[in-house]
Length: 279
Image 1 (cartoon, rainbow, N blue to C red):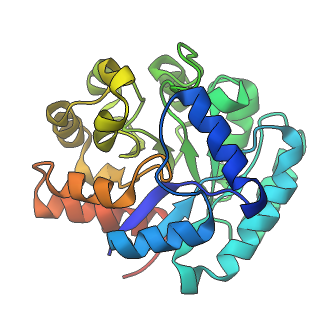
Image 2 (spheres, rainbow, N blue to C red):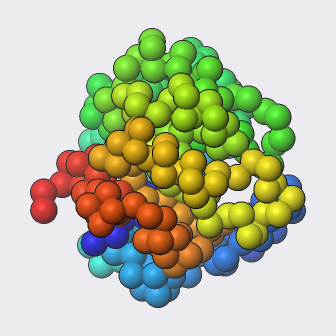
């Protein structure tokens, strides 16, 4: 079984517009049209059994629509293989109510994006959300490192990550993009081995599509070193679809030089643990 723990879709009415805007700001291509149906087709083609949607609330008013959509998606997850996390913004003063309702409705996690949301990861607004989400046993996925749409914006670089972890010690924290995108030496030196999970999204398969960001890419050799220093039992597979192609991401991990046991943990078993599922 393969679980892709990091994907994105958009409502059909705005998918084309949203993808075009994001693609232009990042100067990068996308592989799907951003709809749920396209993701389902991609999953079938790539032999991905399940995908975890990570919606991002870029303004405090968006959480209701995002979370209503997440509930509708999850009603069909047994059929589609698509499971959605919830959305929340650091400026939501009613964050406790939002998280309580998400947990009560079976939403298993949330996504925070300090760069898109413009709030440092160790800002009190994020700290209180993460602490509350931990109380409800939720998984917290955080965009970690830089974002190519906002060059130089250090809202979630290793110093802020370590500050947050030292203050909260969250149980089920996933640092997207192998710990911190574009900060690979810092990740290998300071983050690998810490009490957090990494996902593989937007790392190895992106080099050929992002020549203008080649200097920021994670090499296959350093990828394997980080995996083994951090522990394959603390890493989950992610493609960052539609920005990454699921089939390419699967094949790249299979050819990475990691053992079959390490791949099985990353592709499947670690996701089961985070989502508290039995075999």
